[in-house]
Length: 425
Image 1 (cartoon, rainbow, N blue to C red):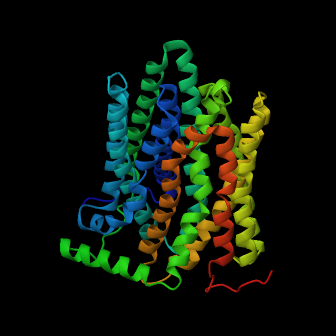
Image 2 (image 1 turned 45 degrees about the vertical axis):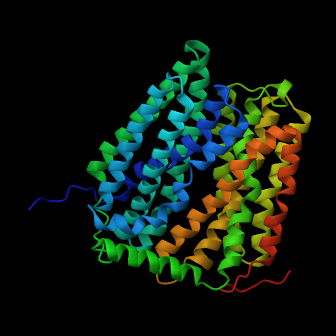
Image 3 (image 1 turned 90 degrees about the vertical axis):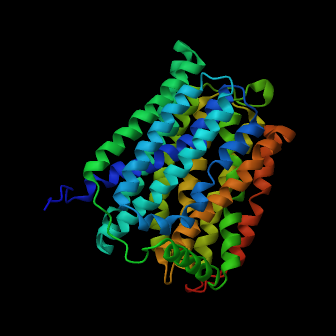
């Protein structure tokens, strides 16, 4: 009998797997927007299409049960890493073609399907291979390497693209960067082919009909939860302003001053996200964890405070759009303020899903549904954000973003928290 060769320590596969989660997600949501802006694509088209292709991260719970029917979770993790990397290679080739935008967007949509499937299988390995104590022990490693991937994808590689643009031209610069995405993802797939554990064998699903039956029960029981419609409204409106601001901000940074933007270079944008943004996000996440712990969990008061940190920092971008400063440190400070608030406030959304929506018969599946719907709450406003900014200009757009935070405060005040001890304020 063949002996297992997987290393005992999860540190051999958690860092590589969660790095592989973050890299394509940020490439599609942020780096691609900057690339298309450099190629002269309109904000309306960029915002709409780079948001729409993120839909598989919302729909991934629908095919999760069917992954149990074939191969192992390990197989789906490493094979999707290799597929994702290979398609990045095709995107690099497509940038030389006349219809590069439609071709590359289509390829990115395929990457989104592959990468979201990867995330579902990876979560399954984590939950099946580690006991609750180990899950708590290594959860920090998940977040750390997911954020390292964000720094590499949205910071380092964008900075590299900017430097290469100066020397070798726009097309060659982004061909090189997309090739790096290809090499990194394929290399991770080959590595994880050897290092990943199998992820367990499902006993729930054996046939296609059983898969549909499980999926049907997961959906029905999810929508039977108490106060589910309040919960869905909370998930959607909590990110309503963020979905608009985050998609347009890098385009605003790149736009010329004559267009109402800051006229930053690609390299400068990479530095802003890779240095100021990443450091502030990690710090905000750490501080939020301590805050929630000392607050005794998610209460009405703590939820409203988290909502404030999540939404009010968008005022920093409104200031940038009105003042149009030239000092990179001033701009970087605004990015740091917003990312600190994002890291701090996003905890409120995750805790709500964990404590209010996930508990029950299908805890993992319902958590996947909740987290998928948070992506929908981000995606829908992102899709229209480019149209709005093109119509009213960047200055009024970011003022509109501040107005768009109002629904988040209202739903944070109104959403029931029946499983928790409410705190009077």
